[in-house]
Amino acid sequence: MAFGKKKTTNRKIQYFEKNIDRNENPFYPSAMESQLKEVLIAIGIMACCLALVVFIISRFSLVNTGSVYTNETGNTNFADTENSYDPAENREHENSGTEEASQSTFAYTDNDTVDLTACMNTEAYETITAQDGSYRFSYPKYIFNSSELDNGVYKFEHTSENGIDYQMKVYKESNSGDPVQNAQLLYRRYVSSFYSKYFELVSDSTDSQGMSRALLAGYLDSAETKGAYIIAANDGIDNYILEFYYPDQNKNDAYKDINYIVDCVYRYCSFSGTTYRPRTFLQFANDDMGEKK
Image (cartoon, rainbow, N blue to C red; front, side, top):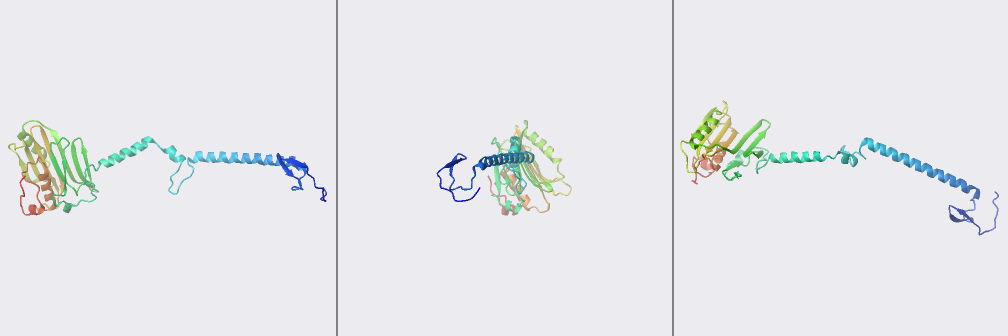
């Protein structure tokens, strides 16, 4: 083809169904039109094939890894998260959460450490009335780290790496019959557990509540470091029992912190038989019996 001066013409040619002016495309030979179409069609087919291959590879990779990506903590997202969700597993977590909550059922029973000095006043005790309203008791606020109500038994504990350090249990159980005889049976039930006692009382009659009771205080071990205090009463129908177990490192100190706490537990208990209100530590240390009910 010679590239000389040509006459201007208004003739149009068709390309891809569009009108293209040859004056604007002087080097567009009509012979190349079909070749260009074939090349473009081939390129299109190759592009489609390549896209299909990429798609197949990506899907195969997704199936094998089970996730789109893994984050920095190693937790998978999207597909892996959805496939691993199990409603039963979710219920298990809910149940374990419920169990964990039940370990601290009552107020002031989530203490990290035991603080006896914080219990040296009458305001440091939480009062509970039994579900049936038949009795009432109080526990120290700054000792226990777990609590529960299980089949009518109120249980409070402080557990450390050495096991249970402090424990209080309060409950009622059916036991009909003569209150005095039942109180004697309660005494015999507990007395065999004591290595030594510094206080005991067994009623030989009933009081104004129609109750007889057995009270015991002492030590469970020969080293006399495991203290115990028992209040057990009977009204001819039921037994009412409070058990308090605690460490005691100085049996010769009658006015130590734990003894004041025991005194408050006794005076706050509705079936203990006491006729006195809870007293201050100063009154306790001075052997002042305090105020009558």
